Image (tube, rainbow, N blue to C red; front, side, top):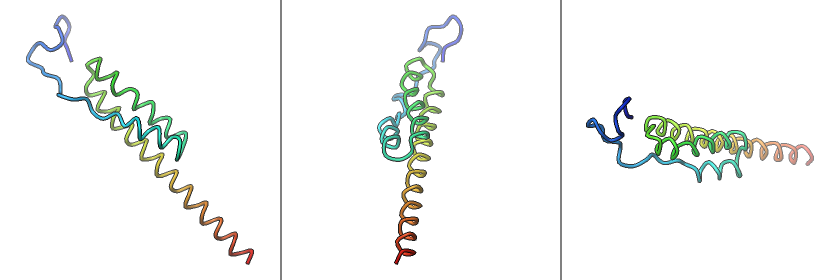
Amino acid sequence: MSYYGQQPGYGGYQPPAAPPPNHLVWAILTTILCCLPAGVVSIVFAAQVNSKWAAGDYQGAYSASKNAKTWAIVSAVLGALVVVVYFIVVIAAAASNS
């Protein structure tokens, strides 16, 4: 964060030491293996983390990291629910045919 007319890094403000995790691998895996729409949203937020950090938007980078993680979790949960419902339907269909 820099104020008008100031160089970044001056004014006593020191940026955090390391950028937050971008969760990109998890976002890609949940997109491929679980739920495409929620996974794509996760990938979009994951891709924003490093660019926001490089631009000096540290709060935005943390927010994008949090959103990427949240959407990856949503994608994984939706994928798991689809698998569970599928197996319940298959078992119910097999039981009714017996």
